[in-house]
Structure formats: C-alpha cells, structure tokens
Length: 126
Image (cartoon, rainbow, N blue to C red; front, side, top):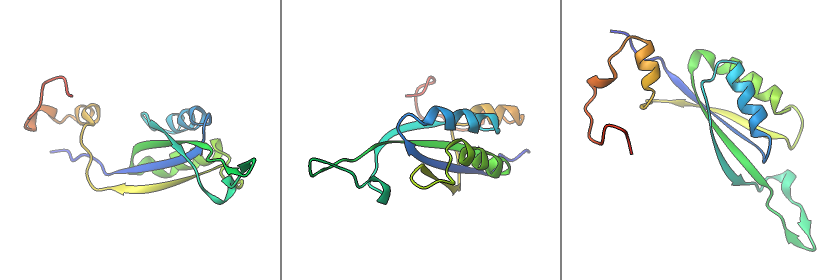
C-alpha cells in the first residue's frame, strides 16, 4: 500500500495586492494551489498614523499546503517573488503538518482508493 507523503504548510503574509505574484511563483515551483485570506497588520514597519490616528495596513495571508520534498523550492520562489530580503515586504514560514485530509486528487494519483474512508456527510461536501 502506498502511503500519502508528508506535507508542510507555507504561511506567507504580504501587503494587499501582492498575493497574485506570490501564488504564481509558488505554483511555478510545484505548489498545486493556495488559499488567500484578507488580514490587518501591526508589525514594526506598520506604525503609520493619519492625523494622530493609527492606521492598520491591509494584508493578505497565503496558505499553501505542499508536499515536504517540494517545500524548500517553493519557499525560495515565494521569497524571491515577495522580495522578502528587504524589510517590510512580508514574512513566510513553514509549519509541518501532522495529517492532511481532502487531498483526493493526490490520493488518486498515488493509486489509492479515496472511497475507502468512511463518509459521514453528503456526497458533494458541505
């Protein structure tokens, strides 16, 4: 029986409007997709004020689940695309994932049967 490979989560936080460049770079390096979440920042480079009122700049959080053997290549491309060697441009970090579900396309590609798991919900998902 083929085992599903280990996965990492690359979390990237950048200024609003920069996510498309990051996602494109990640995909070109082997990522299959990403989830983008809007956010607000409060780091040391974001202490700007307008007429004495603090401004919280808009950010985008990009979540990319990636097979571990592709992590370093994808992270390097994310770093380049986000110009993260410069201050205030963004941050990216990797979290090792213990378990991942919902990657049916990968399970099928490995020749495993995705239907062998018990289904508790409707056939089409939520």
